[in-house]
Length: 250
Ligand code: ZN
Image (cartoon, rainbow, N blue to C red; front, side):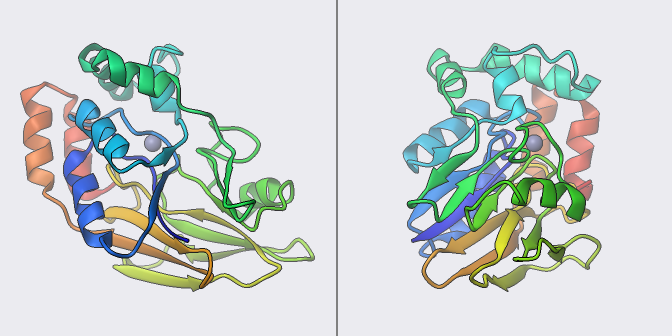
C-alpha cells in the first residue's frame, strides 16, 4: 500500500491542498497523525477535505480542545485564543468529528504500521531526540510508527540491540525530498513534519509518503500560498504571532 502521511494540519487549507496536489498519483490512502485544527483560519474546510479524502485520522491535543473535550488551560496565550476561536466557528458536525477521533496508537495493514500523535507512551509527549524515540520504539513490535506533535520532520531507527539513531531530520539543510529505505528487522519512528505550521525553519508544507511493499519513506516539502492564509487569519483576527510564524516556518 502507498500511504500519504500527514500531521499537524492546523486549519491550513492552502497548505493541505498543495500537499494533495503534489502527492497526487503517489498514494492510495491518507493517514493523519492529528492536530487537524488550531492556529489556522479554515478548521471546517480542512475537516471537510479530510472526510472527502476518506482519511484515517487520530486526534491531537488541539483537536481535543477545539472539540470541547478539554479546556486550553495549559496552552500558550496565542494557541489558547486560536483554540477558542476554532470552537466558536466549528460547524456542529465538525465538532462531533473532532470529538469522535480515536487516540493513538492506531494500527493498520495487519500491524505493518501505526499512528500516534505524540508518542507511544503518551499522546501529548514531544519526541525530539534518540532517548525519547527509544522509549517508544522499545515497547512496540510494529515496524513503522508515524508521529507528529513536534512539527519537526525526522526519522529514528531502532535496531535489534536497541541502538537508536537519527536517520534524517535534525539540523540538516532544508531539502525538498528525502528518501529512506526501511530495512527489515529495524523499527522506525517517523515524523512527516507539519502540513500547516512547520517549525523547523523551512516554511514549506511538509508531508510523507510510505510504501509498505517497496519499504521506503519519503519526506517531502512543497510551497503553498502563505500570504493568502495570512490574509484570512488577519481578517478573523487570529493572533499576530501565529500569522508571522508561517512566513519563517519557526
Ligand atoms: Zn500540532
